[in-house]
View (cartoon, rainbow, N blue to C red):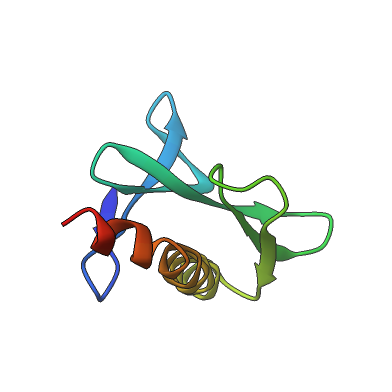
Length: 89
C-alpha cells in the first residue's frame, strides 16, 4: 500500500509481512529513504524518525500527523543545504 503526501514529495509505503499490513510506514523521495513512521504501542503514539540524522524523532497522535511532522522536519533540515546546492549551479 502506497500513498503520497499532499505536496507530492514523500511517497509513503506501508510495511507488511506475508501480505499482512504493519503499523509502520517508510517514506521515500525517489530511491532515498527519508523517514519512518511506526506505532509505539507502549506509549500509544505514532513515532517518526529519519535515517538522515541520528538524533531526530518525534511523536504524533496519528500516522498522518507523524508523516506531516517528518515532512516538515525534512524540509527544514534540507534548507540548511540550500546555499551549497545554489553555489554549484
